[in-house]
Length: 222
Image (cartoon, rainbow, N blue to C red):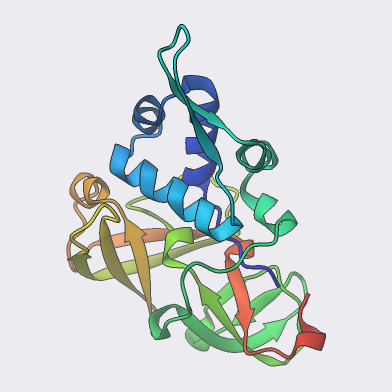
């Protein structure tokens, strides 16, 4: 299965760039820092093996940025367009973001964990089979409250730690979800605005396509 690496923030940033033709203006529109925007664009380029944005010089606008054909495709197709591209995961599986459970195909594909936790997924496996699913920290949206979302997984959790990375990548928040702990990549600005401190109650929004199966035989992968 191909690993989804495009997040809602990436889509919003690309669509803002299509309108603004400026990384600075686009980052302001989606409320992230310029450094965070540059990092996310570089991350997409590494994942897809080609640029999603290119620079322009001169003209009435005195230069700017525009989407490449690849960037335009991702922006138009939306969150799940990565499934149409030959992408690879940018973050390797880690113990904190690796889940082991039982696959259930009905009523919808999911992985059943301990303590009644069920994760909606988009990959295939045999019903009742034990599987392992990995989750990229960049693909998780963290919020302090509930809001309308197309994410199939909306899970309550509690922050256990917040660690600054010391770079434009922002911070890493560790949240406890039942017996499991997840690493979530967030901006430093979000840490301040959401008042993310140990013990804070949060909600995790995760697309079903964000989970990728690991350790499966190739004949069972899709």
